[in-house]
Amino acid sequence: MDIESMAIVGRIAERLLVVLFGGFSLAMGWHLYIKGVEKKQVAEIKHDNTTIKLKDVGPGAFFCVLGAGILVTALAKPLVFSNKDKNPEVAFTYGLYIKNGPPAGDVITSINTILNNVKPEQMALNAQWKTKGLERALSKLAEVKESMLMNEFQTYNKYLAIKNDIKSGKKPKFASNDEEKDYLKIEAIETNQFGQEP
Image 1 (spheres, rainbow, N blue to C red):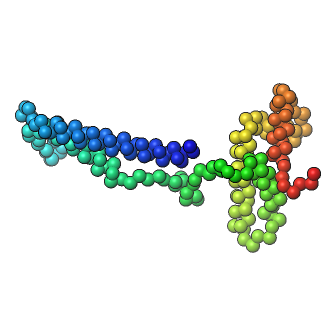
Image 2 (cartoon, rainbow, N blue to C red):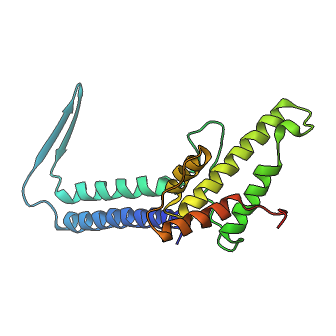
Image 3 (tube, one colour):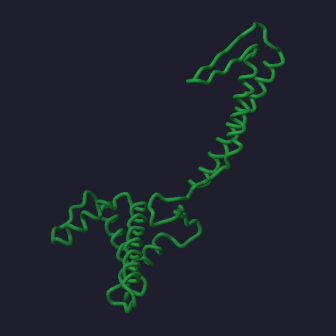
């Protein structure tokens, strides 16, 4: 079950519990109200210039009011699932889960192909906002790629450190053969793209 389904089931369960509690309070209050008042009781509530006096009122009335209040409040408000993001630039955000899509390796290869071949500065875009939009889309694709690699490989952060060492001319030090194999596997996935010459 994905996160959105769990949230929906949780909200429905919460609503049912509130309604059950309200109904239970109403039923308890009704049973206490039927029995009547055994002792003469008086209650007085004062706030500033307002005074509320209750005479010959048993606990059943309070339970009924409480239960009715809970039911009215719970049922008056609709069950709302908000998708609004706090970021004003984006109106709605949804969690995207690809269940029957291509394998992660193919998605990363597709992203690599786009990132390495689409250069906004080399394209004849007739408006600056198109260039900025394309640059932003490419940076988001790079984030998706990095996120997928981090989910796939626990050693991805270590790979990035080693990759930077190699770029600066240092020889990488691997803790084990397995770590070296992981590095080579990540390197192949991270750099592979469609349409490359064999």
